[in-house]
Length: 115
Image 1 (tube, rainbow, N blue to C red):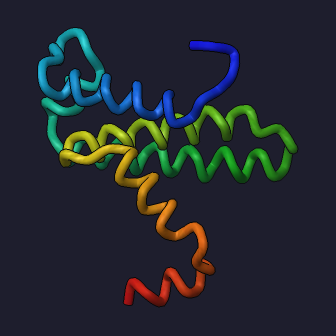
Image 2: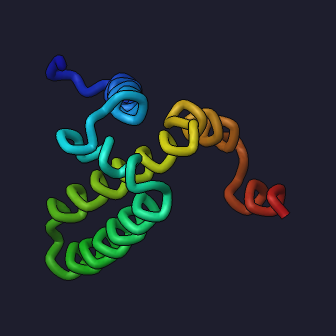
């Protein structure tokens, strides 16, 4: 990758790798293939675990002012959420499209529209 961070490219490449590992990855050689092999409940367990670790890191960051661990834990959470999406046949394109749809809405309007 280049030194310029292209978030959509990173997400797209990761989506591609996740789909490949789901389709043909060896659970003995690939963590992602192993998660897919173990099924949705295991993936959800990891998402929950990473969410908890992210929350704890945020509390630590608030006290210390250092967000390094928070960034790492958030990356883990995002990664496992992406595995979950992949497992269910979706990807970050769908999430980004939904975020784009919400972009010009106020948060309160968007939330009310889901009721």
